[in-house]
Length: 157
Image 1 (cartoon, rainbow, N blue to C red):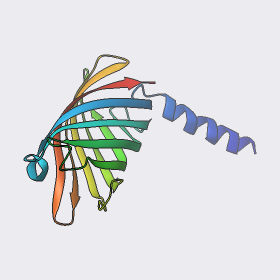
Image 2: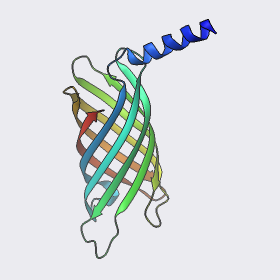
Image 3: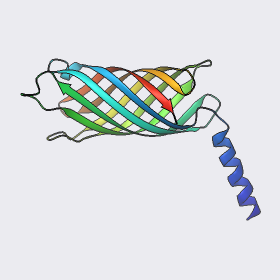
């Protein structure tokens, strides 16, 4: 029993020893590109993640998000919406810059949207509790994709 407590304490200490761990929430706006760029003019996204520091410069964790593509003409087209569920990874580049990626599945939540493979490479700058993030996000579906170039903010919670 004593050994289990010591091992548990060491594991918990290793997760909390790295500052990049913990809850993060983000908001972003994007410009649709690719298949949706002709009919859709704006993308809004929000996400929350819990990151576990696994090394001085690397963290991983689960991410849950929401993405909405707004059509140019809402009388003709409906919004395209996804609920991404992904694994998130982040590599700190030394100072405050970081590279990241989310990989998972984007569940389609509007009618006739089956969803697909979700991906989001990121480049960001961490100011402390707030970060600035540039990203490219996409959902690859049968017969096309829903992609956007995004700029957003991220908050450490």
